[in-house]
Length: 440
Image (tube, rainbow, N blue to C red):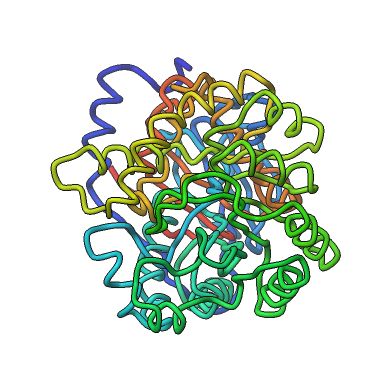
């Protein structure tokens, strides 16, 4: 990559990166045509092939061609990224846009309205987009808040990534995803309609989530770290309930992904025909076999494990005693879990569980994936072509092929050598509109 990376030049570019942010305006009508001139481009992360000195032609919000050399036409506006490395927009397969963990999280559960959560989510959506993530899956939020935010982004009313939303998670009564740790009357009022017991009731919960607007069904197959209950991290749904959930979702055209830590819950969900696992902390050899047999994805969310372990063991721990015990148990295990899954040939889609950790820092997951044994290109593939396949969006995103939506990001550095440069995105285009450009 001698095309760009002389040491002195890199230092100057890094210094200039903080110079200016130019967010794009949300405007009506078709986006302009662009000639995006790039120093290097990873147009198809699946191939790993980098092309240098290219021009991406963009019209009507889509890529029309990739041409060698620096081209321009009278009809296009030139975007000069000749000092940059360009990739497709990144995809985070697990976020929670309408909140963020912190000392006030439990108070916010009982004081924020759905409207307020949506407004908070709009701010976090902007941070996410500016970090280079042009598509996300939001897996667990107040139905009214997240579906309103998703639709506002689609209309262009709010600046944010394309959102695939599950709304409230389908959960067992008293388990992870239900309301825990408050007075009974408070919990009764706050309990989502997606909580269920018994196979038929769980079918009802799935159908109701689809009716309310869910793009994907998210369930909590096991206990979770941040539910304020000492119920462990093992399986919580029964086998017939899992089978009913998967069948009901698939009959209504929705994929099902499961929050799951314990191997019992992971394996039972995969046997029931589930499509993906979020976290996967205690997966075992049988889990690896089932992932491959079912062609299912793992979304490791290593940042979440790292974050809760640091909070639980730190001087300013704001977690409850039940949360702290589970954070100390599960958090340190997740890196080794991802290492074993990757070595075993499990398909991995990039996902962070951001909202546990801070919004806008999603790209820190790349370095953790590399620590878990992935190469930089494999980590980038997880956040592009693999995540697009996982979310059934391959016809639209994940590569910069002609006909795909023009989701384009740029960094100053080579992410195939140092994946942490993805933490410093300098340019963001989504759907053919420029939302961020740092100028030297």
